[in-house]
Image (cartoon, rainbow, N blue to C red; front, side, top):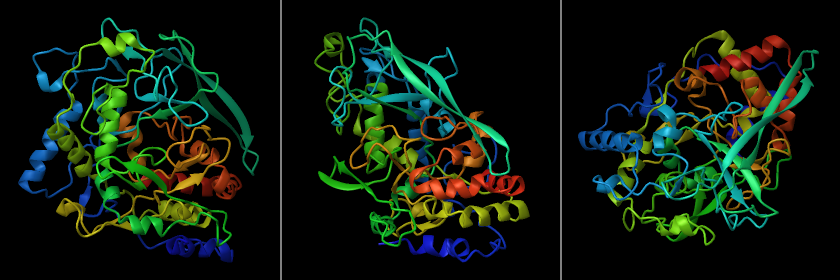
Length: 451
């Protein structure tokens, strides 16, 4: 099936006509779950108008999201069990102010991103598992120390303006348990934003499947397809919505997987720890319980993610912004970054139900070409496919997180760089952008900055 909305958005591009700027944009990116805050807390606000019980749940979840876990045994019995191997002591440590992580500078430790590991078959690396954990509790060797370097690539816009792109590359020093497998695959991932997740979960699966065109039946070069992942709670395969490759079907499972992989905390969904057979000191460490994460804590953290509001759009009637959105659409970017979706009427919270939202994503996988490939499969996603990341709120990244690093590994320092890294299905759109004049490129950047 082909995305009808995407076809409508591309009419201008196909006809060759000058794009007509819309009269005004809708500032309510998250429908009723939109918050008008453009300050440093813009990603951390609860959806407006919550009922009392939902508001209590939100603030309980926020405290649990921010509070650090400690080594077992401890007097804080519901918050012990850190590790034995871990990346962070709390959710907030990676998702700073509920926003986006970034790669480390040269010589600095990795704090808000991680390295996924697997072998060529897609299975976890046999000695180190599915994720490198550079920290450990006392008495347990850490897995290793990621070390970053940067590669640069030079290019030229159609008007002759030069640009330079860079990407981080990682090696791992001080391996604590012996060598990695010869066919190890390493995929760097910055921590993604966590606001607006409840709205994305509330979009009917059939609406997302309706946007698929896996065989490019209409010949437009876009062949998005859904990832399908195992839903542990329901013991079935389900639409993958969350994560850089759409490898998790629900916010609850995504949260439980992060508790295990990032903090080393077991749960009812992931009852087995992260220690592999080669990591005896890890296996022998004291546990914080069986499981370590109470379901009520997992539920509160899950609902916190569901109820985080989306920042409102700004400058919605600015001619430069509107011009930029028209050019964004004409270039074909809106075929994947779909502007408008609708949530179903029976969402768990009233503020999420029946909302017209503007995430600028189809939540589908797209082949982004060799430049962005990590060569590592995840669920049904190939090594060149990535889920279209929502763009809502992206214009406030520098205000909230004090950096502008974009894409899955933070390689792009500007909107322009992020666009120029696009390939595969997005190659044509990238080339349209690259060949625009400086004023038109600036207009697209202004549009993205308004989101």
